[in-house]
Structure formats: C-alpha cells, structure tokens
Length: 248
Ligand SMILES: *[C@@H]1O[C@H](CO)[C@@H](O)[C@H](O)[C@H]1NC(C)=O
Ligand SMILES: *[C@@H]1O[C@H](CO)[C@@H](O)[C@H](O)[C@H]1NC(C)=O
Image (cartoon, rainbow, N blue to C red; front, side, top):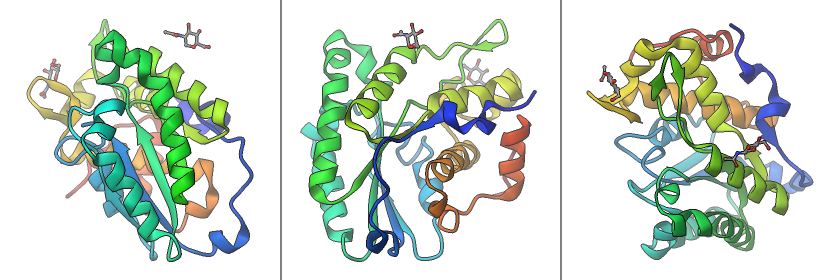
C-alpha cells in the first residue's frame, strides 16, 4: 500500500508568510516541546536532535507525563523560550509543539488544551521564534488489525489552534498512524519501549518516528532539507509503507 505521507497537503499546513530572507540565511535551531512521546527515554526527540546537520542545532525539552498546563507550570516552557531567545541572532529558532496524550486524560485538561496551544504560539512569536504544531504521535494500539489510537480529539484541536493563529503545522498523528497501519501490528510492536508499552519508543523506534517528523518538516519547508539528515532507506521505507529497523 502506498503511504499517505506522499500527499503533503493532507498532512501539513501553513498560512503565514515565509520568514524574511535575512532570517532564512541562518541555520535553524529546533527546540522540542512535548510530552513523553517527544522526551528522552521513550520519545522521538533525541533521535531528531541527533539528525540535525550542517550547522543546525536543537534541544529536546520534552517532559514525560506533561500536559500543556504542567509543561508551563513546571518551568519547561520558560526553559524552551529562553533557548529561543538565546539562539536568536545565530539561528532561526523553531519550536515544535506536540502534546495531547496527557491533556486528553481529564476533562479540564482537554478543555484547556486549545487555549494553551494558542498561548504557546503567542509566546514563541514574542520570544523571536517560529512555532510548528505537530499532532500527537500515534499509539501503536491495534484492534482487529487496525490502529485505534484514540487521539482524534486532540489531533483536531491542535489543527484548529494552528489554523486559527496561522501557524505551521504537520499531521504527525495521521502520518505515524498510516505508517504503523501499513507495517502491521507485529512489526510496529518491535518499537515498544518495553514489553507491553506500545505508546513509548525504544531507541530504534525513536529513530523511525524522528525520521517521520523530519520528512513532515521538510514537506513544510524545503529549506530544512540540508539540515535534517534522514537515512535514505528510512525515507524510502516510509514512502513505501515498509518496515524499517535501524542499525544503531
Ligand atoms: C475531527 O475532525 C473530523 C474532520 O473535520 C471530523 O469528522 C471528526 O468528527 C472530528 N472528531 C472529533 C473527535 O472531534
Ligand atoms: C507491545 O505492546 C503491546 C500492547 O501492550 C503488546 O500487545 C505487545 O505484545 C508488545 N510487544 C512487544 C514486543 O513488546
């Protein structure tokens, strides 16, 4: 089956003008805000930062268990914004924002989710950065051979927030779910962080889903091409919907 990753209009969106030519001459810095599916030790963030090349830089601020509310309350957001401010001038700073898995666990969390994302957008712009919203990484949870990740509500709210403020966004939820559906239950569970944990990623899974994030970001902005280094075999496997296991 051909991957829907090949249809960029379905998976990414943007309504803002491109950054000024002067800014684009600087290499990008990617600061990653998110929950455990981005964080070290179970997410895609560290592998993504490792894939940055040609003078690009990045830092993974993902926090295990974070909601959009706790990420701010516990100081992770202030750290992210401080990184944006200190990178300005030497880099074009981007902040990827990927939440939802924990926000959706309580009614109050879900109610606050979209407004918190919109405030994140304002804060990044004020700090001199460019926000990129990512919908929630899929859970590799199968029912009758099909992924049921139960993330549609937070996916929709993330896209609504991004389009309302005219920010860049990419549909990581749909792209990651499409890939997992294509490779199937057994292969996708080889990326489990531990036996029985099909939400979080082991190191190999981190590389695979960081690659999918990189593919989506390059679809959003082709100037990222030279700065995000993804194994060509992984790019081909994702496009073909075929299983990939990195040699680490
Ligand atoms: C998400 O958005 C789609 C497309 O607009 C809609 O069909 C679906 O009902 C929405 N789902 C939820 C849970 O809001
Ligand atoms: C991965 O997690 C799922 C869900 O708990 C489980 O069904 C599967 O057996 C696990 N596989 C491995 C290899 O850990």
